[in-house]
Length: 416
Image (cartoon, rainbow, N blue to C red; front, side, top):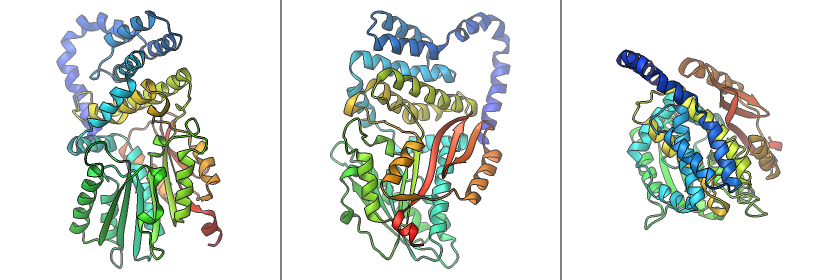
């Protein structure tokens, strides 16, 4: 709401400031509006796929002249796509992407982007609330919980759960969190995981919640279960939100990392598995259909941010550059093993998880109704919160962007 108010007041101020110049700029504005950047991007991708030179370079120059990281939604979108197309033509996608990943945003900037994103968009907020409420419901009357978090990054999900545990009737449970994330390049592969653990430990101490933390830096498909120190007397929660898209699939290996990780999780025999996935279809091994899908998907995301956040907001570019732009670059500019962003639809994930030996739980209607009400109160009317086949869905203007679901191993489910 604060973001929306800031946006409205900013628009009013801009109206007063620029009102006197509207007549002079009208012709130029009409010229800019006449250019369909999305159509030009598709045309350019087609030229690159057909190796039409120098036509593809001419289109890139035209798109570059009308794109900007500080413009409207379509200009900002075009800015990141044209960077990726240029790198694809030059054959430098992999090298540039590695530099982007090495030049990670610091925690302070990431926190600014995170705060703005959850204020402007319910996707992360809803995912955390859904996951945390599912954990709380599963933990009723239990003294110890062990959460294994695949892809914890900065650990932003867990402070709110720690607060809820602190206020639990009968006292907080003993909380263990095991963080699993891929090693970082350089001399300290566990640096971010360790820093996240320290912050969470300090937070748990403030609220007097008994807390243990273990960080594991490893590729997910190489995890050894015995290294996780699972205790059969604790409630075991597996949490994995929106990071499965980075695992390799059948295009790289017949027995894909996605299926191997799911089978490993099944062997852990969790009390509950919580999955969140990006509902994307831009995983084709063929460039052109993949480009069209990723362009449509991110057009919705950039439109969403443009509709809810003022252009001048300093953290907006952090969201677009670090949360959106890096993934766009990888999907468009990289191929083979270097292309690591490979989302699937939630229905494709449903088949995978069922085949791994899990039973899907129905969406908790109390959670769903509460989230719909919160969305109405706090967020733009064009956001979508719905359910389908056991999945809680989120989207923008009819396009489903994210999906959440909960699962139990089939044996434990049948024994209940």
